Image 1 (spheres, rainbow, N blue to C red):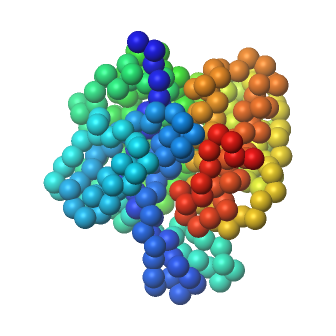
Image 2 (tube, helix red, strand yellow; image 1 turned 90 degrees about the horizontal axis):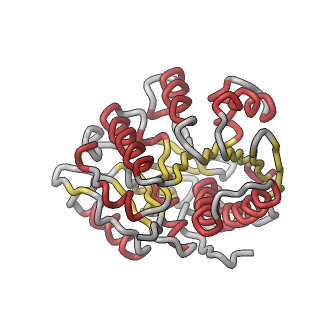
Image 3 (cartoon, rainbow, N blue to C red; image 1 turned 30 degrees about the vertical axis):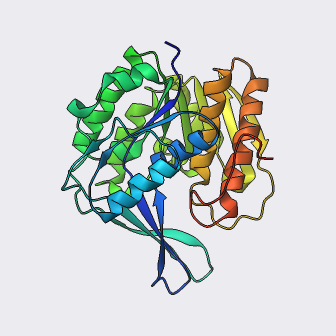
Length: 307
């Protein structure tokens, strides 16, 4: 059977986006990095599987309805009556910029367990994608390790986006050591510039890339916000500037960028030349930029024809 689709493993979130600078009224939106990537890949035409633990309350029903609207396959997720969906409050500061204010996680130990994973989804899909949101919790980390084994057994391409949220870790050292140990398990790794510097304890992209070279990551991508992004293939770097857009909210831009990369790898395969990598970067930059033109990580519409 021809393997098709991208598996995203993680936690579903609800983003409570402040409507104004008073930070007293919020708009409820589906969110979470791995959710954003699942939605992004589906919008680009790729089958998307989402693996998580869902509840049965009103918020969980909202999340499930949003998944249905986006045509995300949750048949391999698990339900628990006691599970409460995580929430993220996004506030607006005096300058009008948005920032992550606080996390709400009423049931932190209600995560997908390793024995709740089903091998058949990995046998169906082509790519397995995960982030650091499954690594700070010991039980979730074991689930991720099992998922990586199933992905490897099923010959999935493995993609990792650090997506660091230091507030969720017990310490910077724990975060750095754990996340770094997973970088070498993936074929494709995406890091933001500040994440690269944090993980490698360097202060430049060049120094960070040089420090990561010992792990021989096949495809390394570094995003640099409005400046653009670069990629490394066999020690060779290529940079592509970002297109100019009227950016309103950068929440989820990196996830949209990752969705676009996964689309390229899924549809066109693993690139062997820098010219191919450059094409992938150009497309990912366009999708990432398009995601910043509306408030909320999933509010902006984009597809394969996005200019």
